[in-house]
Each structure stands twice: as C-alpha cells, then as structure tokens.
Length: 204
Image 1 (cartoon, rainbow, N blue to C red):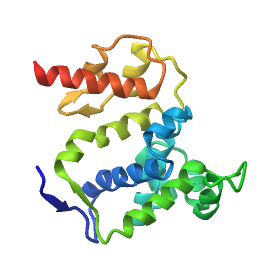
Image 2: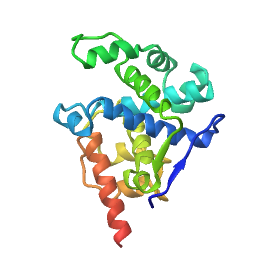
Image 3: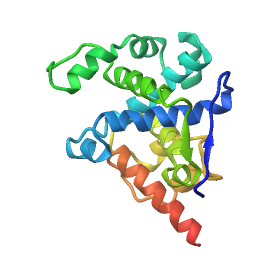
C-alpha cells in the first residue's frame, strides 16, 4: 500500500503514543548511523535504552505526563525517567561527533531528544502503511523494553516471564517463545527468532 497517512495532529490521544515512539526510535537509530553501524560496533545493547527513552520523551512532551506517571506507565523508576529527561541533546551530539570521550548523563535520553526534535520538524508525522507493517517496530519496541536489564543468555522460562502479556500480531508472545531454541544470547537474536517464527506461521 503506497498511500501515506498523517498520523498526528495535536491534541493527540493515548493510541498515538506507540506510533510516535516508533518514529522517535527509528530516528534515533538513524542519528547513530543506522542499525548496521550499531551491529558493527556491537552496540545493540543500546536498543532497549533507546526504545525506553523514546517512550519517556513522547509521554512527557505530547501528553505532559509527570515523572511518576511515566514511571508507572513504563514500569521503570522515577530516577530513570528523570535522567532521561535531564539529558543534554546538544552535548550528546558533540559526543557522537567525537568532541567528548565520555559524558555523564543518559546517552539514550539525549539521542531520543534529538530524534524527537527532528520528527517534530517534519510538519506532521508521515509513514507508508506498508513500511510500518514490514518493520513491525511496535512489537519490537515492547519486547526490547521488557528485555532491559536482562542477564543473557536467557532460558525459555526467563524469557516467557519477561514477555508475559505481550501479543504480537494476534499471537501471545509466550506462544512464540515455545517455538524458539534456547538459550538466547542477545536481544537482537530474540527479535530475529520472533520474526522468523511469525513468517513461518504466515506461510502455514
């Protein structure tokens, strides 16, 4: 489907949040040089933090949620929310350009802030429906947030516990986990396995 749709115009509703977070998440990856660069530099561990930060920024900027409300919504601490929101996007840009070797604030938060500003400059948020369907970003972000802080490799029981309640393309995540080989060593491996199982089910 090639038709483009405008998804957001203020005021927004709760149902827009996932989509907005996806756009900020995608833009964050672009700022970092793309997914391939993250793989090359073995920085895929940044993905859960970027997904989390994207939601924090959107909930704060678009719905004006408090630190407590954001923490409750995402299942994280208020301190984490505070660190993300206090991150400095100008300094993170200089860090990415190599001007600083080290920074003392939440890196993913600064990147998400840069991405949010970029997205807002687009005069509305547009995406091809087919591209969104192929990317499947929404479920991937939810999975990555649940995996934050996990000690890899994970067993089947540990992964099922973390993904409890998530539904991916009308299939409970735990049902997909049952079809995986274990242990799983990285978040990227889990996303790959889920996408592969979904493809197999669609063929069947």
